[in-house]
Length: 399
Image (tube, rainbow, N blue to C red; front, side, top):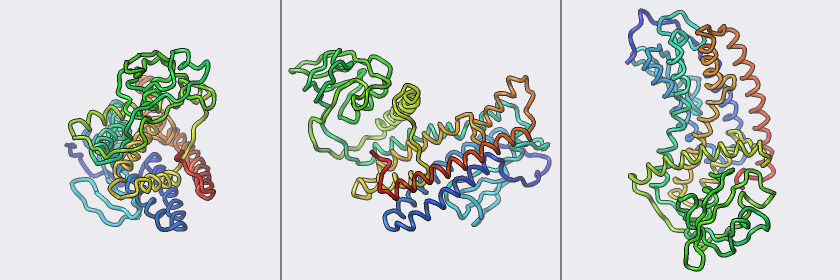
């Protein structure tokens, strides 16, 4: 519970970080809605689904800032769902809870996000408390996928039946040197069950740069083969140099009970973080480069995922998986030490600690965040233009 201050501080506007999120997502969402209005029908539903997902992810993020700020006694002016103009709101205690007309996120207005003399301002809290408040949003986005993925597993969903079979081996590649043979059936990778083609590929990518033990079924007996998973294989070869195909070509509808789904959701979340790390390392190892998509592109992907299942019920699980992936991306992005983002503000707290408690002048920090905000908007415009061009040409993000 927050302590009571001597008086209500004057109303403040959101700090550059929260204001930047509001403006950038507003611009992007307006562009997305304008585009989908042109395409109408299924495209409009894609935008609506995307907005709902985005709203949930950002509200979870902002609620974590809100809860930790309250925990440490920071004066919270407003917790808003959506962005202004305000539709309605109510006052509960010292905080205004509002619902706003642009349903594309949320925000928290704290007293003294830049600087304030009020005893309960954010800026007057100890560095460790400010650090926790700042990172809590990103951490919540990294924890939420555990439950989203667990829910995806609990909903009935289609899953490929049949293990991966080695169809071809590149001469001289690590798999050939390890002794793989065409027809080998992949059973486990690093001791984990490789139950289908997708799972086998994912487990191999988890071990890029390592030598991993792959157990195969050959002539009725299991053989374990240690093989190197390369960071930057030649085009078309894959990390180990094998081509795999499915034992069978059909799927089955499955669902997982909650007591199994939650641990699996935690494992899948951790695996996704490792895959993200490996992907970034691969960029510097010469294996391609990053591909960016803005809200318009993500809205397009959302619609493709929803329509791929063919039914509303069948779309629930893939959309939950997509929401989990977006949440992880949002969490990682906000932890990066970039101006305007939470990670950028955390960097200033760390610098303050390293300087023995001497803070960088608030006006100088504000300039850094302002420059970062301008760069972010410029990048958003470029990415949005690329998204529009791709959609116009009929291409898809999903390969």
